[in-house]
Image: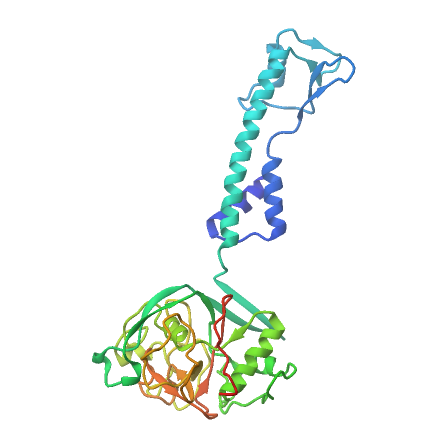
Length: 375
């Protein structure tokens, strides 16, 4: 195997990068061809003489010149060709056994490498990037499966809608790294209509990198549908459970950054620091999952209907769309106070406001996430 290919293989295993299918095949071919093929064994069809042919200059693994190898063979017969000899049957047998042993060792190493590469191929990508055209990208982050405590404790305040606290097991899914921006909205709103018309530029606070706002949840669902048709992946709004699990990222505090208002200010645009407007996504610190603006900037639509509390709520991460009235939003916004931005806070928004936007999720095993328009 060439030094360049060795370095490339080393890079795959050290960085965890997945090779493409072509690179994968190339690695396998390199491993299979790593034994020296300049020594060949042939049998003459007429007299049955076994001949070892040596093509070009060759050194044995021990560093012994090929001439010494020739001289060590007993019963040798020179054929008048320096590159062709007739060794004894014992010499051929020993040589063949050595080649078989080397081949078996190469096969064992190859199997180890194939198993390691297959393991890498089975692991999901930690990030997905969708190309929306004209240089506009949409980044998705893998949120690993897990179980968390949903809702708030009594010590956090008199928030009956956030109780009882309950454990929820959430399957793995991807969530957009940022709130959907105005540039992303424009790219998808320009695609053909599926169910609803979309305003190309609905936001009150203008800016391509600012979150889109002043939209309804029906419009957010239409965005998901058009994006799904474009990409072949079924995008949707997150369930409340998925949203809170992704927001907390393993924390039990009011915010993923801590409990104080100072902790909130590091990660969110809210009433205390927003100067009365939205801001470009990604300007505050992310959480442990690599998600930005889970607190503040704009409220985010979820797929769930509004219920007064968590009694009889799903515990499998799915959206609660049976019963209930109204639309759930999460995360707080630029004009909300610090309590609105808590991880457990459950808001409601049925209208188009300049403080309500959304982010999206994708998951191979899908739960019903879209709003039933007949409800």
